[in-house]
Length: 471
Image (tube, rainbow, N blue to C red; front, side):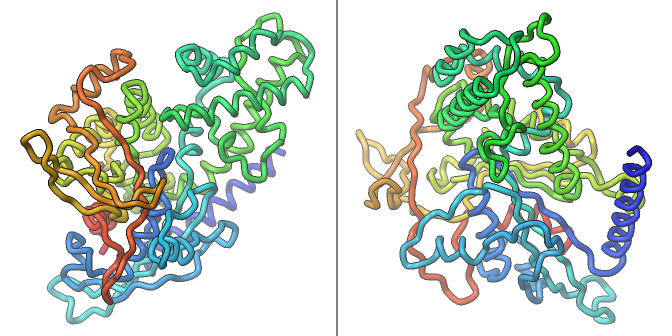
């Protein structure tokens, strides 16, 4: 068994070495990971980014597009035949068709390859031919990303952390009530294990809907073909030192370890360790609307997200011998079109403050980070509306719930992010000042000119940061 594992590792290493050398000297490939926590808009981001790289009329902040250095862009079959293809055409049709609607959210890993033909630059440009860059975009659920933090935890540690925060959450009442009738030291009973897992899964779903982000294990929310399997049939229990072999507690512990070994580690090995650049999308507006506890939970989740990465610079030899590191990480607050542009600086300051500790650690390791507010697809227009003797900066769009047009003012975000983060860290249950609202808009009907991609806010700046240096 040991020799087989060593041989498999050696073959994988040689294969990786060959692919790396080929990519360095012939047609380079840049792997961009796209993830985000619940309702952050990963699918819309990828769809709009690809559409705007294919039709670059709205990408003025992407230097290679503005200068005409991108000669052509086209979709190609992805290199990994075992990963589903990102359904770009279906998602684009949903967003730009006669009855526009938001596409289905990310539920598994998918991939898309966009190849760019680039004109040479520099003093010898006239003597060189065009070059090609393959951009492999990997889409995966943010819930799975948070699972990577479980690799460094035991079942006891994870259970203790979860059970410590549950009493403060109303959505956990059902699971906590069920625990009162559970004796972890008794012999394992499968119906009881299934009941505990079902109740805990119901709590996770409710917690995510309430705006919380510490919803691990992530596969409980997106089980796919693992639904109903023992590897997803466990739940947190208080440690019982009297629990012996064959007890409920020991079986839950065994399944937790199996989840790490058979679900989390393969994802880390097969997908996560191959990423060069990463964008993390954050629905910060919804967290602010949900209250201080959700904001503090989001801040901590950003730290957990970064802890999963291997940030740093990719030199030629280091990438060949020690595997890839994430060179650039962009934290992007989505749904900037839900705010008038006058409040975009405040939104940017908030996302910078939320991710400050995470970005500092990444920069210390040698990675480059940035934070900005963007809208992958602009669904609103701006207007000023008179109110009590002054003008309110509003946005107007088609409401998702009714389909009717409505003007919306979400409330004034503070100039100093500490006015939100300080009460969140102190455990406040509601905002003492300010009433922050969130509204769900449907995509607007579009009439795109030839050469233009879908309208957006700062998507071109995001692209410049993530891939501009390679163009």
